[in-house]
Amino acid sequence: MERQRIIVGVWKDRLTPVESREAAQILAQGFPSGSVSYIAGIAPAVISTLSVRDVFRDSALVTVAQDVHWPADSGSYIGSTSLAMLTESKISYCMVGHSERRRFFHETNEEVALKLKGCLDSGIKPILCIGDSENDPDARAAVLSDQIQGSLGDSELSARVDEIIVAYEPVWAISTWRSERGLPTGSEVAEMLALVREILEQNTKTDPAKVSVLFGGSVAPENADDYFSQPDVDGALVGGASLKPESMTAVFRAGESAWGGD
Ligand code: PGA
Image 1 (cartoon, rainbow, N blue to C red):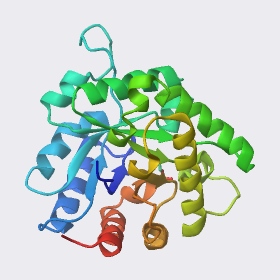
Image 2: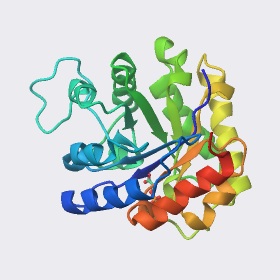
Image 3: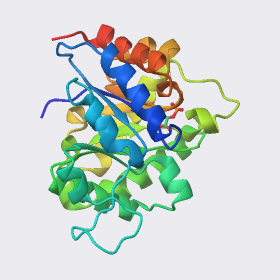
């Protein structure tokens, strides 16, 4: 399976439905109508998912779910969105295990694994988010190994990691939680993603060279060119900078200039 390049703007719960629709319209107008060599998407808040999907209908932009609940039977899981709802709504990408879900909703590796399996079984491509808050490289490797082993260690998933997109988002680089530490340069990002691939190699049965690995954490027009020029950076999750259509469009353009159009 070919590695896919992908850039996703993640609106979290920051834009209202009206703001989301307006921002989606501006993005759709500014996005090239010809084919591009990467997937460009937006993950709106759940309440805006269908209206954003409708705005994107005639464009190349895709709508990504921020989360999903895993049980195969939709039913008594109040407040959640089922896999069946995503498939019926033609949402074919879904984020799983974002650090804010782990932190505020106490999502565990076991739940993340169930969501990953559910997505794959439903034909939805999951974007598995992993991340640490560590300064020390050994401590970082231990946290990432635990997340990768805990969510992908299962024998079935372990052999299917090339069907999953992995996004490495160090919590200290995420704009809302950013520490005093400066943001990484492109080559530092490349080094961190190499560590992720090393840990994938140790803990799964999939060749990590076949796995798309993205970076997330304060990606913006100012650093996107540097990040995307690194051969092993397959794209990004973009939070704060995605809230303004002009800066999201600039990040998409950085992808286009790094990877070209078809
Ligand atoms: P940020 O968020 O770009 O605002 O740092 C990224 C994320 O949380 O996925």
